[in-house]
Image (cartoon, rainbow, N blue to C red):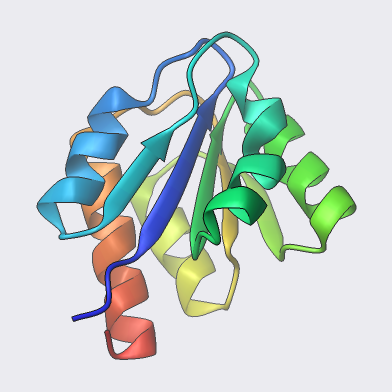
Amino acid sequence: MTQITVVIGDRLGKGQKVGAGVALAQGRAVVIPGVAADMKLGDVMKAENAQLGISFCGSGGAGAITAQTKYGYKAKYGMRSVEEGITAIEEGYTVLGFGFMDKEELGQRLVQAYQKKYGI
């Protein structure tokens, strides 16, 4: 099985719970350390050759928009639920922007949705 790499950037330097959920689904989580980590999402995704990026901030958009603008990743942002993230993956988005949602379930279910969509 190919392992999916997911980069997580949180405006407040969090993301560890989402990372644990990614690991539960057999993915590899790269949690960017420090405040304003969401703004480094695209850079770290490119460096890690990641399949998915998750950005967290108040609006759920800044890091995702930056990754899209700088590297051309297909981004959807302003999301507030796990289901919205799953739908975004089904629609082919690779950068997902959420309001603050550092939950294990989010990481696990997003990786599972990616695995299902791409037959991994």
